Image (cartoon, rainbow, N blue to C red; front, side, top):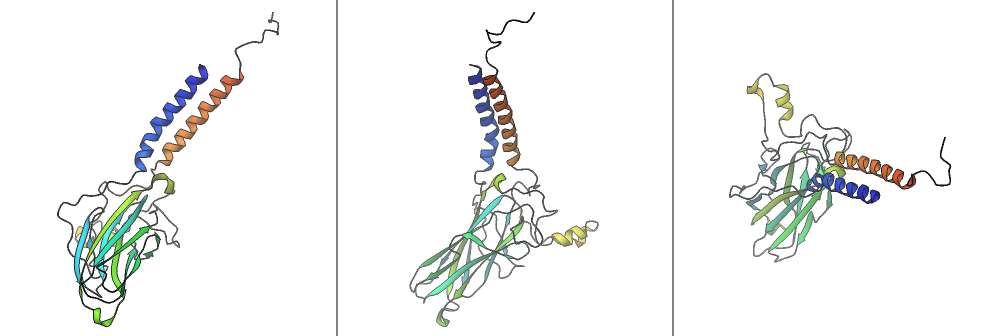
Length: 266
């Protein structure tokens, strides 16, 4: 009965402590489309159209244009950028590509997904996807790890015939993220997220008129501090289970009392 009580307490503690961690590992809630999603795209990094995660942005353009969108991504998130290009009724073979850049305008590689796809002659649409690596709270200066801040998605055609140049097309872009949680947590954090204008803003704190904030995007609950993750929960659970295992081992080995063959002490 004693062992049963010990094991029951251990399972109860594990369930209570693991609850928040399980919630943290679920996909982050996405912003719902409320009719205010952007209907145009920028033509460069500086003019990139800002979109929130969960919004489906649309744009009309001509074949050969560069289309840019920007979105926020925080530490612990693994963003997925999806794009659909609707092509004209008559066109030749062409290849479309979506590239993702971080706040330092470094091109980020895709973990998986078809970031480049060819559309055969007469194809009505082409779908692209890029699943980025998990955003880290901190990284070495020489590394190319994705860091918290603004990200840019660039959509363009990379191969087409001269006769198709300038034909009208329409594009749809959507960004969603999965919250990886403590599995990707690291020690340390950035002083500021990598967003356009943050350097100018930090140098002009005394004079607000000189501050230049070129990006107003940030997660709904603000940028994370970088020190908290569900690893703390699992560390506490591991320590508690170790203590309960020690108590259970002691209960198993101590026996029911003094052996009957040992004479009582005088």
